Length: 466
View 1 (cartoon, rainbow, N blue to C red):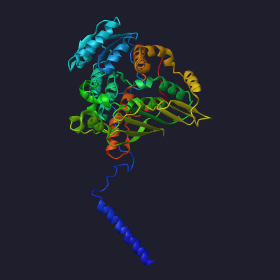
View 2 (view 1 turned 180 degrees about the vertical axis):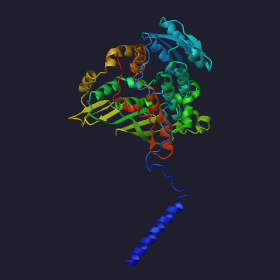
View 3 (view 1 turned 45 degrees about the vertical axis):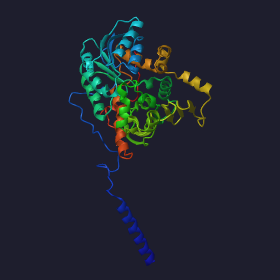
View 4 (view 1 turned 120 degrees about the horizontal axis):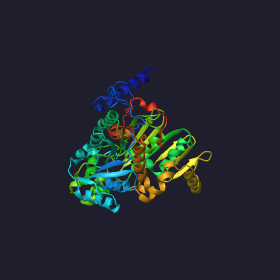
């Protein structure tokens, strides 16, 4: 027995010695709080006299005077959609590419609308924000200018509507929140996917209790963008999106999949995102594509692309729910935002196979005819109101038009917007938060409470109507 004990001790000491020999540096342990989620962006105290903007109401605007800044793919399409919305006057068009401004002017001409003031200087957006005849600044530039323009617009008394993502860093997220609270101006992130017909139907179903208690949701941005990212002719002005894939590793575009799920889960209206973990695969697709398209010795093939092909981020909410969000723009896969909702009474999913399953027969999707009847039964009231016109005007099947219609409707009637500045900050914050987690092998990271506790003031998302 003694010899066995001695042998065990010898083996144990050998094991420890081997471990020590292979540990070049001691393991890094979490800071205060033990093994809990790491706080990477402490919540600053709200400045004295400043209050939250939960369900912010502003004075009604009879005719919403709009200035568009950035007239590439998204901006030019927005000008066309706004030309169909009642109660709108387009007063300014701005882009550093003069041809884009001219193209937008032609849209107004074809629609029988007055010519807008045109701007083409790199800093002309500041001049536009300083004008006295602008109510809403609509930002469709490259990502780096989203927050600077939105903040400047609010500081000069304008409401801001900004394309996704609204912010690239946690610092920018806080800038948007602080500016909106201080100026009492709206800042809406233009998350069009919240207005997809299926997404709106599932929101209505969830609010009517069809799925029971919501437990889990999934969203994604899976979209093969290799051809556009490497398009030297201008899919993205000066290939700005490619530069982000070179420089960052995380979920660079989380809001399309995340937004609809957050509204279904009442994020910052009764619940909040508490912490997340995130991992990325290695990068394969961008380098392989560059080598095949431009050659092994080309500049693009030699570049380093930091962003892993597939990022998977999992969020835990204060109320115990979970959300999974994915990002992949570097592989040949069919487009998918997933949009999956799972509850104690049922399940719905849009991609890759659209289906709904409800108790008592939730082991398989219901037949298509029954699903279509259910979707018609739970068609969202806003879709009933404007859906047919949205389909005719277009914009990703009509959801873009509904988004714009709702923004103008709320401004004209002095109602809270469907998407507020906290949505913009929370959803965009996953970019840097996922990066921090990826950098630290999936370390749990706290999601800041951008409402500073005000998420408990209301209990559900409301799309207001007069």
